[in-house]
Image 1 (cartoon, one colour):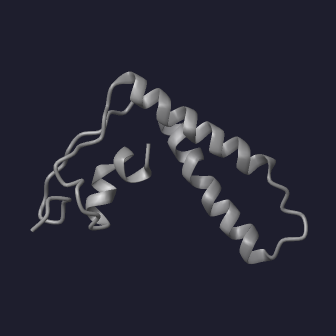
Image 2: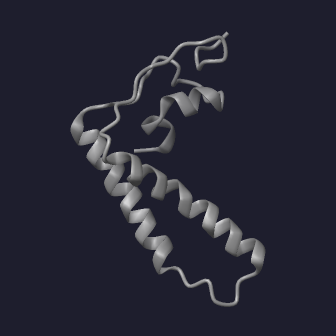
Length: 93
């Protein structure tokens, strides 16, 4: 599954064609799949050796590590995605 299909709101924000009629899937299986992907990414990042990398690369790795860490921390709340419409929302103009 592509990142754009997984998050059609992101696709719409990025102005990718063909996603503006879709919403993210929110079934429990979809949530488990996302958390498994975040956990896998976190484990790969943890296993990445940062010895000898520049300070910029170390900071970049820390920022990248935040993404799955944040998703996993919020998973305990079993948050569901909802379409959200606003003036600056993802509905095309």
